[in-house]
Image (cartoon, rainbow, N blue to C red; front, side):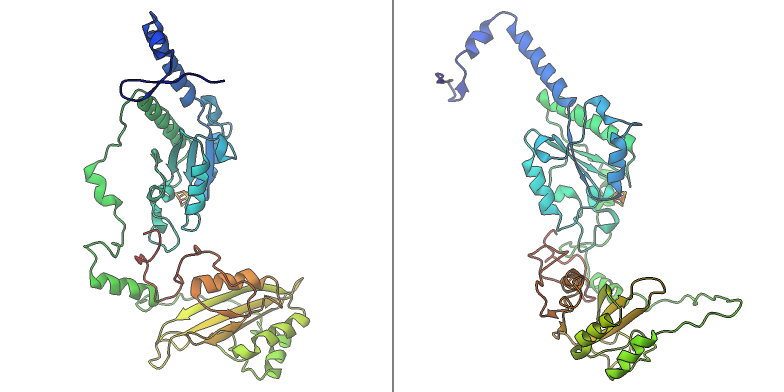
Length: 395
Ligand code: SF4
């Protein structure tokens, strides 16, 4: 079906019936009422797409449950962005999650709105200076309503939805709705650690931040907690006998008292294989730690160079389970053989340690980023990493 389209004096499209309708007595009243009717329908059928990532998500769920019941204002929660009008971001958003949240937002049809629920979504809250958290979703999404609190309760979210309805109705009437800013509160919104690009940031702040990251317990002055035991303590073996036996066969000093026994990287895989054969079938964890110079097992030893320690923990399965834990010490640039072929569970855990600490696992089948974005260039749990680096992609 083809329709003859015309253009008005300014070159805009004009429907052929437009002037006729305009000249029909009483119709303008009808059009105004129709617009009100459409606005009423729009504001009372706000379907929510729940972007619930942490604790605030529970309050969002409670808002939909029987006590508050947002359905009574026509609001229901949909599990697909394509049928939703309002994205409610309830919880902490990490840097890696942010592009996925944006993708879902882009899949929502217009017109659409966004509510930032809770202080994590609003500003990153107490995680805001962390390497992995977005300091407020309004750094990548247009937020219409902020619902403060940690967490805001269901009534607060209900109030936020009512404010959104009010905002939509005002916008439909052609009003420009701009949020009021209280100038007295502006200083409250600044991050506790000035960012590197902030003129107020001094060299002393850089040094203090680095010190707190590398040497957090040096200034500890409190007395150790005195615990009085009554009765004899049961004798606790530090190392299970079979584990100690394997260590001896491999020629490893098993009596380390300042941490797990240190095993050379070249014996790492062999030790794991032999322990697995002895019944240590559960790969519990691998934890890598970065030690800057003059820190580590020997405390503040002047001669201690920068290094890494990679601690592996296995256990037997079943009652009276035994554990085996050992450490491999590496100099910067050295790698540790992967255990992914011995224990399937090592695959992701090794990836995580490489991603966060930067320890390379030789012969790993798929050593890619796991927690951080693919284009991230740093290893955030290294002790020499100053938080708030300008290189961080979300700053
Ligand atoms: S604002 Fe509080 S309750 Fe909400 S996600 Fe953050 S920490 Fe959890």
